[in-house]
Amino acid sequence: MDMKGITIAVSKGIIDSFKGMIAIFYLDKEINKRAQTRHNKQKHEESKVVHNVIQCALLNGGVFLLSVLLFEYVLLPSIDAIFRTMFGAESFVTNVVWSWVKFFILKIYQTAWLVPLFLLSKVINALWFQDIADSAYRYSRGRPVSFSSISMFFADSIFSIVVQCLFLIQATLTSYIPIYPLGYMLYTVQVALLYSLYSFEYKWCNMGWELHKRLSFIEENWPYFIGFGLPLAIFTNIWDSWVIGGCVFSILFPLFIISGNEASPVMGASEYHLQMFSLVIAVANTLFSRTIGQAVAVH
Image 1 (cartoon, rainbow, N blue to C red):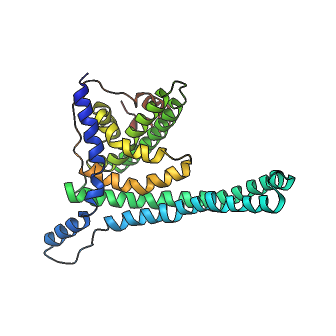
Image 2 (cartoon, rainbow, N blue to C red):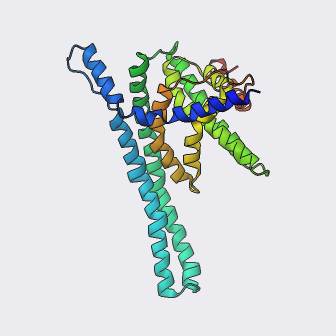
Image 3 (cartoon, helix red, strand yellow):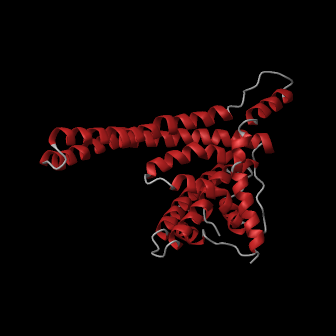
């Protein structure tokens, strides 16, 4: 195994993952300049990559994340302090009544605010992410390549979502391996690969790559993609709360989409293919074989 080549590929992946933070400063300007030249200065729709990135940050950071932080670190501790001041730290009211009040406040907050906002943000983020990816792709590569049919596109998309969900479950299960730090390292490696898949999938779909080709490319060139997804995996996993981690992911992910579009993956760094997706593909194929059939089967 060529450790030098693997190290270089991982390092290149880490460096490339930050390209979006640089490209965001010139992307809109260059896209609009090209569009204006192409249409001989006629009216054209201006690119809104920066606008969409800012909107993602405001929704996920300014609204979602801020509300979670205020609730968990300001509102609940304040009410707890009031109970302790009024009734004493060890009183029945503080220990029993406050625990029930806190329980109901949490349920109301989760039901009336957190879950609806989470679902709404997922839908809005998906639209913004796609728009960012399409604009970046047109700038660097031109017109997207379509799938052979609409049914193939939907089948590929559905199967991809299932594979990604199963892979996340696989990664989570490996984190429970009771050998430190083996479990954590395996989990981090798989999450890094998954985040790389998220980041590059928009570009690869626009190139007309089907799921089996996307996954094979990641498995064949795993050192680079581990490096590329590692910063995002670290930024999102340092938090104890999965909600906060999800908000951080949604704030940073648009930049990684742009980075993936701008990046040139290092290929052939290792002769060994890291077949991390094999198990989940087999499970997904089994689940779909009796419903959708061969249209979505990955071999």
